[in-house]
Length: 226
Image (cartoon, rainbow, N blue to C red; front, side, top):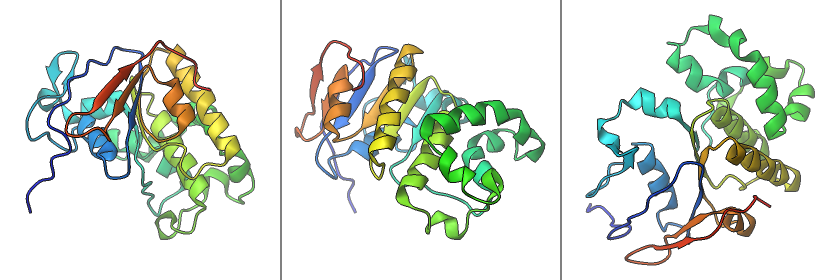
């Protein structure tokens, strides 16, 4: 099968501390572009640069430590809820479970951020609850919150969120906007794939992937998220 060409070219410089939104219809390339920024998909032509260094020349483990990523589909493992949230940090520590307790303070902060406390407090084993059937039986909103917690606990300089408001209730969406404002104040670079109009309004740069064959780039002054 020949590779699908999502667009002919895209030239965009993203300043540190920006909020960027990838907008577009379903299958327009939002998820693909997010994965490309993680080095998971290599462009057919052209280059992706971080601080003027080609992504292909960066150490993969170092790059992943600099990026907090929320995929559109949250993949969970049949291990404890705590281990699922800390999976990326555990992998970095060669799965040394003795390191789990080192993250307790950060864990409490992140759980408050994403609104998982009520769910955890209502389970008998709390964070030690074992995820079953890879989380397929969990409510989608809870899975999304677990994915957000996993992303934010990584504390990357670049935040990439693929459809972060999907499956969240109104309270969850409101929490997310508060998180985005806090992250922006910490000068994090935030990249979001979303159709949510309030997310789009919060962006300084909007890349419209519905515009073919060359995406349309819009730039506006910084605003608070909602």
